[in-house]
Image 1 (tube, rainbow, N blue to C red):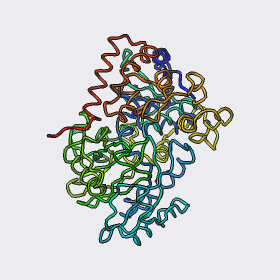
Image 2 (cartoon, one colour):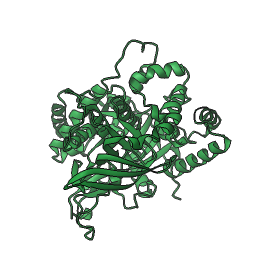
Image 3 (cartoon, rainbow, N blue to C red):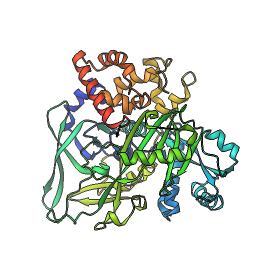
Image 4 (cartoon, rainbow, N blue to C red):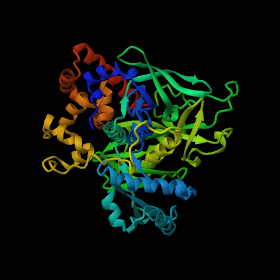
Length: 535
């Protein structure tokens, strides 16, 4: 399953030969949607290649709220079809990738004279569980709530309802799906920018596409493919049927920004997730246990800045999040100085073409995905992380041709090749769940023994990522292959010497190259992940 072209040496060798192959499909975009497309195409037998101009999951797919959920908010607004698909997809993912996607108990506290009331909310939960095919919700006492969230405001609280959704590491999930695709022949390259796509004609029919790309570490290449599929999320730019008409887009993408805060469990202790109804606008928020820490989010605002600019949390979002925190956790007395890290992501939400965003609140927009064709190219946008497999299936079903060597149904399922029980007994269960079958060669390469201090990661994971997981820059390692940069208040500065030794060993970086990479990482961390000071 491990792709050879993700090693430093293997990448250089494989890039030379990319242009030698006639690809069935080239997928543009290396987030969860693109990863899902690569897996779906590969498991059916298509010769598929994915290209990402930055790092895998470097956009929205590493900056989400980490929830794999059905969306009780969407159920409450009548989006029954979306909720049903999402709940069923959630259950399926928990079965496919146990541990990487796992159920998380969530608690909705009920306060006197405040919504949601216990009776109406539990009626909603009966329907929510019905869609999942299993009863998960139950009532909790005030004592139960205090155990789940010791610092949660108890004044006027008369009980709570517990239900279940699921949680993941979104960047790691994306990487795992790409690795699964590699097992069936799919190839994925990060840091490969697509410069030009040209439709080739053969008589009255399409002769496929020529795609010119610029890898970061290689001269320009011209590739050929029968089909191009775009999965670039909020960065999607489809060609218009009439370029002179700015209103002639087949869809209207409304980028919505969501920002998040991360605290230590000591400052915000949580045994279970807690639903927070914001005191200003009654929007549903969450405080969640994640990677041994506490995650709080999210906002839902129109992202009006240029999509090529860094996506940063704004002061109004900081104020909004802390108002909810201080309302529900007054005893914790949280301030921005308590925050270990922050991040903001942009959701690729679709509006009706010609609609005015000012006439519809961001949280009222529907979250369904959409497919459309433009100039022979297929575009996939919208949807939710939870439903990425359904989105990919719908897209690949649209292709007008079959693979030259199709795979017989039933096609292999996600996670199907990773359940080897023979030698796992001496390896921590958390690593088995996260890496699947790759945990065996990982443990043989560097025995799993010592952890990185104050994190859930083993030092062996740093060796493995640098050797085998397509790391090109230091931020790939510290912000996406692992989340170490988010878990330390200094972004991992205390590990600098150790990281230098590892990078020199696996990446062949000299002192100057490492210092350049360290400077790059520090600039990214400080601008995007460090708590801003708005004073």
